Image (cartoon, rainbow, N blue to C red; front, side):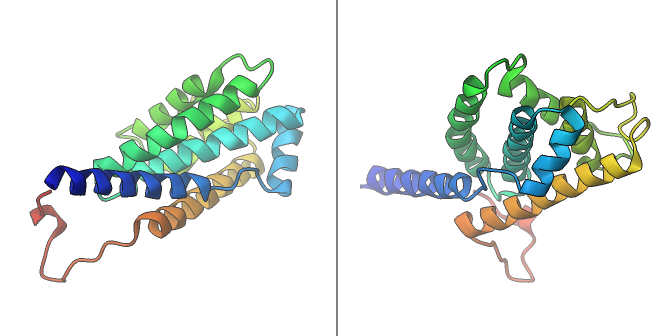
Length: 184
């Protein structure tokens, strides 16, 4: 009956991934939406870009902060159809979720740079809403726009981390056990 226990474990894991994704706010806060709309001139585009930022940050949190790869994979399986459906429902959307995710993933994957991850993600958001961004994520941006975008990214990350802990629990180890010594 080991296969039954394994199946139940996989099902419970998927349910926790669904809980995580469902717990993410569906709409941006009114102040964030007004700010992003002011940058791009369209409320629908601003709403879509903030939504995609939330999907991207939540996916990155699952990939980076979950204790195992199964968690990230389960979250992606639940999230991908929802994010793609939002993209398909957006009229006139030239790039789509897949391309935007590729931009966020590329920004997250940059190594050897002094620019922090929230700054790199904020730069992707600002480019997406049509705010001019120079080759360097910080250069060419008004300090206010960049700071505001970074605050949005940080808030989404904090909320996603809390939702991940709520859905999957908090891992604790005895003080004498190093995480690197554990084997799955």
